[in-house]
Amino acid sequence: MRLGAHVSVAGGLENAIPWALEIEADTFQMFSKNQRQWIAKPLTEEEIRAFKEPLSKTNLGPLMIHDSYLINMGSPDEAKGKRAQVAFLEEYHRCEALGVEYLNFHPGSHTHPKKLMRDDKKTRYDALERIASHMNKTLEETKGYKSKLVIENAAGQGTNVGIKFEEIRHIIDHIDKKERVGVCIDTQHAWASGYDWKNKFNEIWDDFGDTIGMDYLVALHLNDSKSDLGSRVDRHDNIGMGKLGKETFKSFMQEKRLEHLAGYLETPGGPEMWKPEIAVLRKLSEE
Ligand SMILES: [Zn+2]
Ligand SMILES: [Zn+2]
Image 1 (cartoon, rainbow, N blue to C red):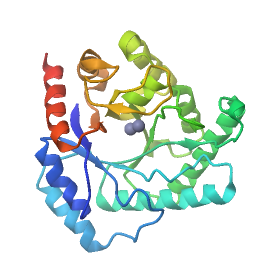
Image 2 (image 1 turned 180 degrees about the horizontal axis):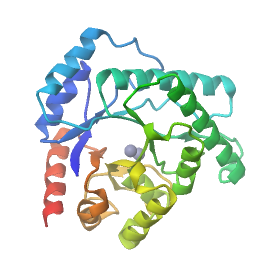
Image 3 (image 1 turned 90 degrees about the vertical axis):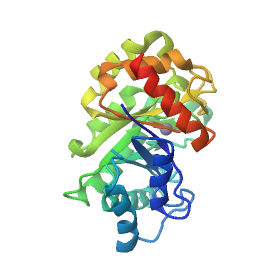
Image 4 (image 1 turned 135 degrees about the horizontal axis):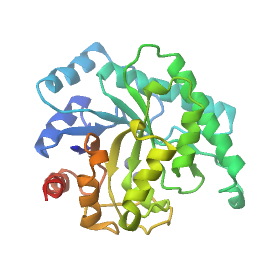
């Protein structure tokens, strides 16, 4: 597995590169702009060059951009949905311009105000279909693009959808151009949404293969968990220090079906933690 972390782009996108090298990573994830802002100015040729040139002198990759947390393509409100789609398209333009392989995004939320409706199947599946339709518009407007739109499984907080493999499959079923779609599994989110990595590791990947198909899987977010199995609470912990523990990460690192993937840390603590975490993961793969 190619290992990396979500590194900072403070002061310029190109600053991600020395951070990734500093922690001895094979790859990295980043935001392509301030993630709390809706729209950023389009990237200039200069900014693109400032990123691509130093990158070409490294072996880092495949890279991943994480989209803005503000984007909710599952919204039932038409204006909000449209705004999300426009912002998502803009993220995709940036991703492609930078030559970044993957644009990772959280599917979204159905936002139904009644708590009882949180798990109503129709409410959830309608939101999944809205997400697919926004993705379809995005794919239609970007013919010839190479970067992939990568659906990340959610932990299930609030009215988040895209939790179970069946829900991700439902999005993909409604996509017209499936060859530019991938999936990223966040180990913490999966655990929080009820996937028991500690006792059912193989069965979960069998289920993924049967439900979604292993060919869609392009990356993992490698995070330990502060929250319990099935808690639906999104709280990352450092590798080996949370409820998953080191043994579980050994399973991830030694699983043949995951060998070719990129794995990105989104753990607390910053570069001084990520460097030893990456080293530990590498060791686990060799044990
Ligand atoms: Zn994640
Ligand atoms: Zn998370």
